[in-house]
Length: 109
Ligand SMILES: [Zn+2]
Ligand SMILES: [Zn+2]
Image (tube, rainbow, N blue to C red):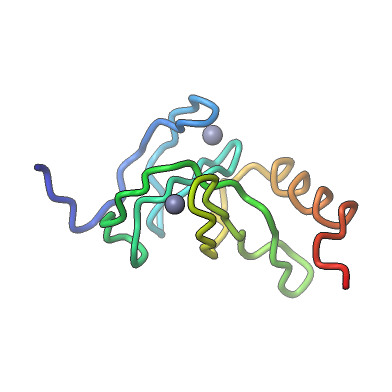
């Protein structure tokens, strides 16, 4: 069993197959192209979760007029995790998540 205490290497996205390069400043936890993540953490970075399922970006948080974070929801267990958007994340994909959200109004009362 290989132990990773600090994970900041690149990885291959299980959703779109894109090879994601390591992040410059932060720990990479989602694909820069399709924004999908993997449910591998109990606490951010510990990789202790056995779920290992794809986490879909379901919401974009806007701060001071720009996208600052994503909400990922696990496609298997429904766990939700907020993640910071990296500088090199695909802006079009972020906008797609944002627009999908506003058109479907999932938080409408
Ligand atoms: Zn991807
Ligand atoms: Zn899960």
